[in-house]
Image 1 (cartoon, rainbow over the protein chains, first blue to last red):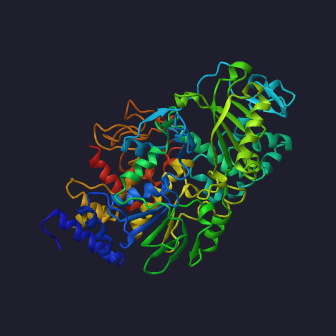
Image 2: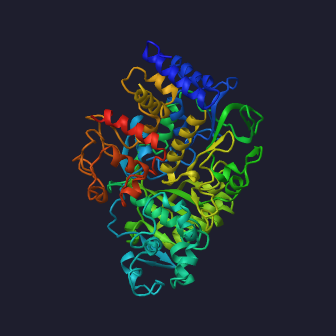
Image 3: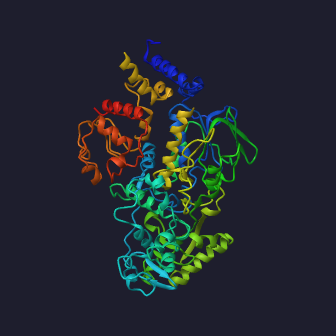
Length: 496
Length: 127
């Protein structure tokens, strides 16, 4: 049993142990040996089956792929698009490369920051410039109200008290903040002990005396999550509060990758030993005792021993799994909901806010959504982003794109006539209609966490392991994707 | 001999064969569990803090005092914990339950043998 060299000793010991545990070890060792001989990036070969087929070259798939390759496993990453990054998407055709998805890296986004550091992607603070015309103004029911005057406005539906002075874009979270917090650990939201709290915000706050008018303003106008107080779980919001406390870390500023956050998944993909295979839209996954096959829309078949599905639920529901997934997983895939976002990026020919004296940023209940200046980020011409969420984004999605973009622009110039003739449309992004996304990020409906949709993908199903932002246990957004990829890679290392 | 075998088994339980192969040059390969730690932490003397602090000279130190250039959560600083095998075992099993209000976003390592192996590795690595 004991061999002379350390190398042999480790190998033999590992062999002995693993053989006792499960069969198939020799095959598991092979990738490690094969990897040692490979120094140059190999073009993906459809004829050589990989250990793991990864569906999706977003952050979760790339992070899992890197971890698996590092441990000696052979990975093939299939991507439906012709680019990596998924919902991390930087508009490289616009000066300053603003991000249309995955825009903000919080100081606690450890895995994402670590990969950026590892691959030398420079970061810069994403601080909002101070606006001499004041903080984000409020435009509701046809009236523009400076933030400082909101507490005194007759349009403010909140009674005298602490919430009346809070601007409507912050009042929802403020109302749900309790002392002590409902959740005191980032993992608690999935615990059965909190399952009975998985009710709608409307149900929770109505019991506390909230009116439908208050609920609408706080949760249905430019909602950061969901569409209204009725279709979002209050438990998710408490999870977000605890998550934000952790992700704020020591309070350092949020950052963005220089050149856009997509530089990070691009650098991750470049570090993979095997090239990502693009334009591989998987429509079917077949598995049996021997392995897994993924079939693309064009009929190409990719084989591997295991499959990691990182597709968002909104995309995974377009894939046929054979054999069919268990009911819980399929129901979760079918029903998990995503935030709607419709964004229009404008070039600002002349800073019209200097003419009308209003803050450049504005929170509106119109098809303009939230107006946010991006000029300080760009370093080039001033940009204005109209960021529309919820049912207002639905309305725009139902129009032909040119008409929708025109509607946004008309809304801006109606609110601010000084903007007329000063805005030029550069780009619009509609995540809801994106064939490979179907929405921006997971928003749990009331009862979905209790039903087990959030934890449905913790364990593998046969030869399929799941990852993606919707499967994250602690983090959300980009860091949630990274976390899920790490978790999935560790699971696969045990399985293979 | 029995003890040696146990230790070996504990290390192997947390180490992929391929990692042992590829890292056979280094004195002690990191256990696979370290993959979950290393995005936030470095272990060796002189390495930089990440989102979490560098862990060198961890054993025997009071929680929240180790790195002057790291901003620990108030909860951890007030915990009174002194890091040793026992306190680390409880912490790694469930950080949030051990110190309410910690900012360490880690759900915990459920397997006691994996915790033991990780702690044993940390003890050497952070010297």
